Length: 258
Image 1 (tube, helix red, strand yellow):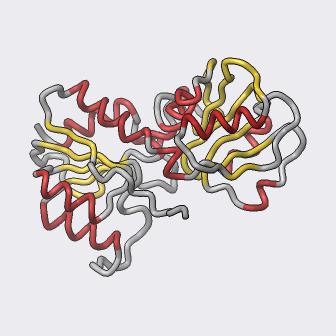
Image 2: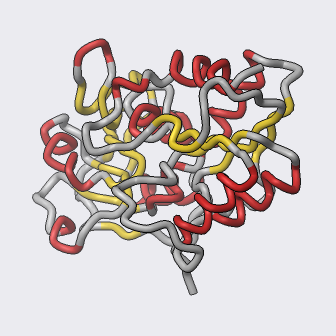
């Protein structure tokens, strides 16, 4: 099997041309023609993940977040990105990322968030052509108070805390969601008619919300982690005998809570 065989399956699910213009999804290290016998999947391509791939004998790493996201001016072992690049190249490991390409399909990151909450009638929040776009909307099985809706979010995402705006005083029925950094879609969420918008990386001033609309910031990592299982299942389904595994060090969240 070759790297391009794995890429084909991933891009059938999350077409690379769908990625945002600022993104760097795709194969960032290695050749599509290189042989691949096993793969390791994680959310972030950290130096520790590359070490694990080497120990496991994997010759391909698949992540959600691109290892090389913006232009590199130098590759140094003193920098986590540089160190991961050095380790991957030295070990001959191909590195592929399905970032916004996987964000923009309804069965991707935001769709997985909707599934956690059991939402019905799930649709793209910010639709583009061909039925793709960022974020989703959907309806709770039944309307509930803001406090109960937040309790549901905490339970389904296994959270100790959630950053929220002022709770709405009306029942929450429609929910908008966007995995990762979703501040740019707050206006879309409001205009969709959602009473609650769940995302990550929401800035302070956005929490001043109008009546009838509230925000819940569950964290960037927490909103996206399901894509790891999605990618694993995708590859396992298409290549049942291929050696693919999810990282044992799955918690790559750089944010710590005390």
